[in-house]
Amino acid sequence: MTKGQDRLKALMARGCEFLDSEVAILAGAMSWVSERNLVSAMSNAGGFGVIACGAMSPELLDAEIAGTKALTEKPFGVNLITMHPQLNELIEVCAKHGVGHVVLAGGLPPGGAIEKIKASGAKVICFAPALALAKKLVRSGIDALVIEGMEAGGHIGPVSTSVLAQEMLPLLAEQLPVFVAGGIGRGEAIAGYLEMGAAGVQLGTRFVCATESIAHPNFKKAFIRASARDAIASVQIDPRLPVIPVRALKNSSSELFTAKQREVAQLLDDGKVEMMEAQLQIEHYWAGALRRAVIDGDVEHGSLMAGQSVGMVTKEEPLAEIIGTLMDEAAAALERR
Ligand SMILES: Cc1cc2nc3c(=O)[nH]c(=O)nc-3n(C[C@H](O)[C@H](O)[C@H](O)COP(=O)(O)O)c2cc1C
Image 1 (cartoon, rainbow, N blue to C red):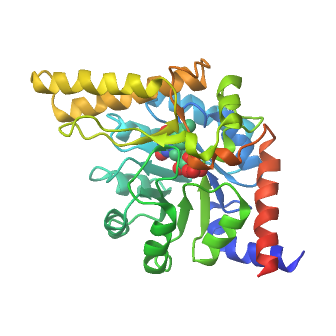
Image 2: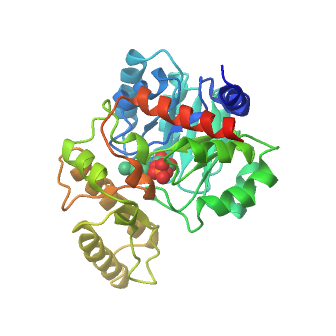
């Protein structure tokens, strides 16, 4: 082992112990993409795969976990969205399968959810896109944090990864394992965040074009062609309807999203829906638009959710090779220090 590899192993030890994996890299859950094939490939490659539950019913999640277990004996996690109307049932499905790690996305979890997951013996990981929310989550007893910057693909917060890492790692890394996400495309960046105190990292965009990913060939082609500046955040058109921005490759779907926002804002104005229902409609829109692109291959009208690291995705390759490259780059960077 080189000095750089030794150092990398030492820096990842806490994250590996927490995840029960060989490398402290999570493949962040991506709706439609992070299903049994990608998740098992990630865990088999020594990383940590996470199933994206998204809008799945408890029955579908049950089948997806069973399907993933059939493809890997290594640990993997499940990502649940806090606003899912059947969150409790989904937690029960995870508990039934003895899932070791549940990742909660979408803001502060409803009362009792964290306790319920922990009672099943699973560890709770939460997303934090800002410091105030991170502190609240830590107080509520979660086991680890993913701090995700606005360079990431999919739904994003307002602050960049580099700033979040500087704000949060010195304050929180001693209290619990913190994984850094958003905009990571190479191992040098992984080495940097580990040295700043991160327990590990989470990547999404970099794994979309893995050979094992079931994303449609058109979706993968769009990623391989795109550069960083093509991954842009959606724009809120109506101040009364706050929508969480989504980062995706630009195409005609941005206009469709504008039209959707107008339609929902009108329903709000006419008193036909409440704010909660309005926001759920927006989330359903995204789930449908992403499916159109990932599964059906409609890269013009579907949503091409992607982070700014998309420019560093240059070919389709097996997941184990992506992990190997990231680890080599990280070790070489540490060797040079
Ligand atoms: C296509 C796509 C779909 C995503 N879907 C979800 C999701 O359903 N739930 C979630 O918590 N995060 C989702 N994410 C975010 C990823 O889990 C991950 O945190 C993010 O991709 C990391 O940043 P990066 O894209 O810069 O690597 C998605 C990201 C992408 C690119």
